[in-house]
Length: 175
Image: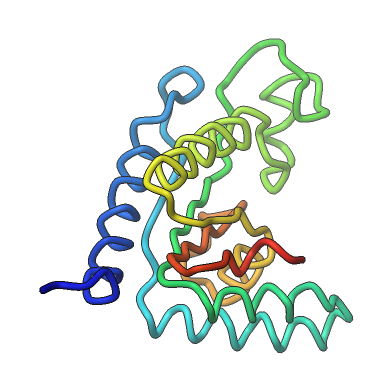
């Protein structure tokens, strides 16, 4: 007999792989792909958790400690990042600038379409997890630590994490 516990890791990794495909195929503004996605290795998760705990103390942000604890209870971690590349529009203003030419003079200001694309991809990814009954939560805090650690490289400007859990009770529920 093969019990669910024996298949859990394999199942979660399979669903994470499906989530990565959903991220890649999610619709993107003007068809331009500025997204990167990955599943964190166990050693990466350990680094992220440690950095989140350090940041909780450094920045006096207690929720980082809570989220680090949630991440430790997770079975996998999907990471999604976007680069900042404007669409070259003559008129838009969604980023707060008059147009893309003006936005490009402030390269650290995110293009609204990059973050919209990120949001659509996140929705696609968590819908895959949910459809497979995998508990999940989108976490800004994880992305903050990943960014500080440079795990996605310098081009990744907005990063979010989606921890995944298969357990009797979601570690992300009582917050």
